[in-house]
Image (cartoon, rainbow, N blue to C red; front, side):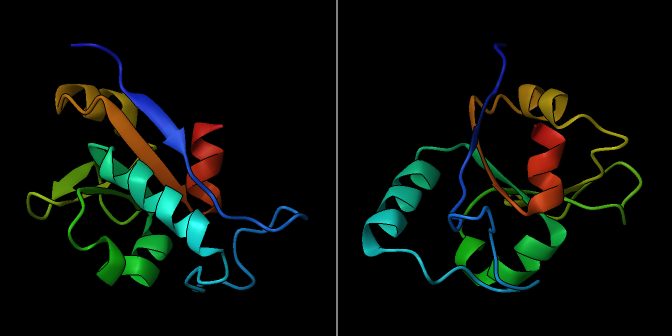
Length: 118
């Protein structure tokens, strides 16, 4: 098993904001940005998002394999084939992805999720 490659994807303003307010669904990027985002997501084995981001974009992410960062689970809870809740303070997402043989993982945020990877 090789290491997973994590790719951070973010639409942000020039001053570094990824949303205007909490719970905002990003709909203010260009059509080209959205097309690029979908190409990147289509090539990913899984997507990592924070709980709030997942809740905000649940419908848009419903057909994709998602790893949702949350503090409300003790370790890892696989809800179904597409949804896994993971507490990154307890279970390393890198090890989880390696065990699942995910070679390419997209990171979609929010802020705490990006901070975890940086």
